[in-house]
Image 1: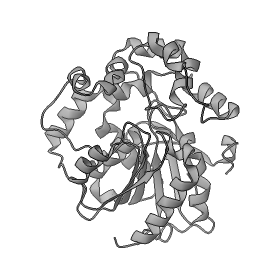
Image 2 (image 1 turned 135 degrees about the vertical axis):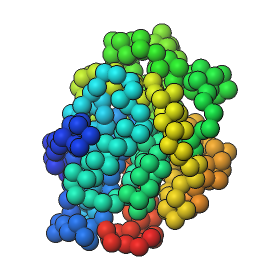
Image 3 (image 1 turned 90 degrees about the vertical axis):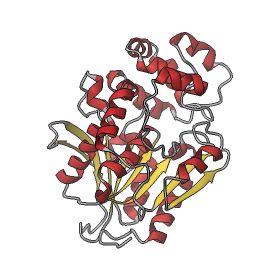
Image 4 (image 1 turned 180 degrees about the vertical axis):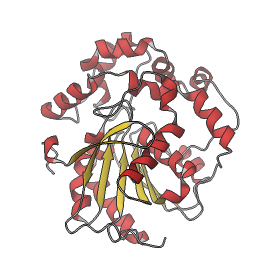
Length: 329
């Protein structure tokens, strides 16, 4: 499990009961016993894939955890349906539940970053009994809304989300695919928020004055090669606002997470997607929330603060007693 060698991880491909085929890394600890060793299911964000968790997988496995990290729908070696309505969080959570079923796991610790944080949090609402603990990074918990607001209206109220309007438009797919190197240059330069542009014409300007990339040249090339397979799937996550709202409303999803669910939130103090005010609002809906601020870190905390993230999560899991698959939380 060498983070500089993606091929050194244990890769699998499975067709799930949902009908979709997923690629994922499935790393077992020495002497693995499904009744004794807990499983951590890691969910990546945008624009990422399983490799975003490369620094955490090995250390967590050596601590006795089974670590499962899929390429989410639309990414890497996983299916890439074209239609946006295939990417609602209800369907994505269904895939994750089916993935756990396929590998013989009834309950897991979910860890998510960025979009993966939102998906993992929604998994806790759609499949509350499948979780023993929840870890979310960079994007705090946001409860289902009883009222639908189009993304255009949301962006008016929160201008820093203007990029989501752009991503929700189909034209952004071709724009970004045609400017992939510039796009990745912006994405992986801390400490900025994931996006500081609202149209492709702003890519050039956004590049000015950026610090060094958090990726090595070899890592950058791996991201470029993988994401160049197509950006329609990843961008489709931003094209499901109305469908997600309708599904959550129809299901009557609660605002609060399960009252006994331990939840850890890790965030970088230089990441505009997470502020103390937003975290305070989030805490109202998360009874067992603990948050840890990572000083002077940006959005990509799994890389920028790889050792801190790895150790904080392990320490927290041990403190709440979730090292064993049979732990009673």
